[in-house]
Image (cartoon, rainbow, N blue to C red; front, side, top):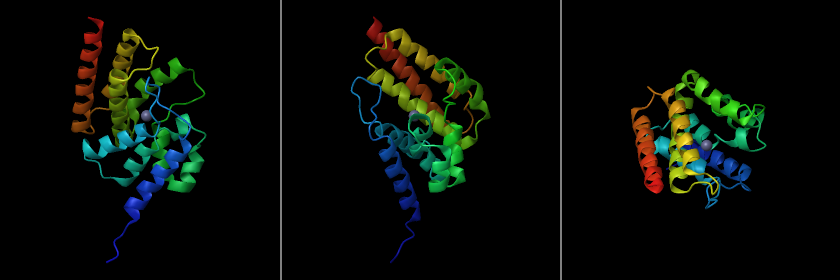
Length: 187
Ligand code: ZN
């Protein structure tokens, strides 16, 4: 029996592409884990916590940092994965021409205006980042910097509410746990 395998093939194509583009990158945490672990986790959270099975959303989750953090341009994604996936990745990408502080402010300002699927990717991304910072912070991040990150992530996710209760709950639980862990380290 021949099954329609296009769903799996498309997902794996996105994964192969993201792995290739992030191949020389490591996460900022002291353990410096391979970068690709992060987009895999974001996509897995969407599927396992958020119950998302929508293919373009899962592909965009896997590809979500390629425009922002690699040489990939939107047009590369359009040609390989189509307009829908490329548009979602673009939605969740910062404008790299802006300074860091401005980019962070824009994420807060823009999050309420994202599409529902982009909001879900943002929430899953912030869950992963908050957990990473609590469990394996960058070596030079003191406790205050970690707390400031949690506050900022909270503000971004606040603008993404109303699209997926499970992901939202998971995010706020992650922030509560991570804040408690940081407070525990401080005392
Ligand atoms: Zn990310």
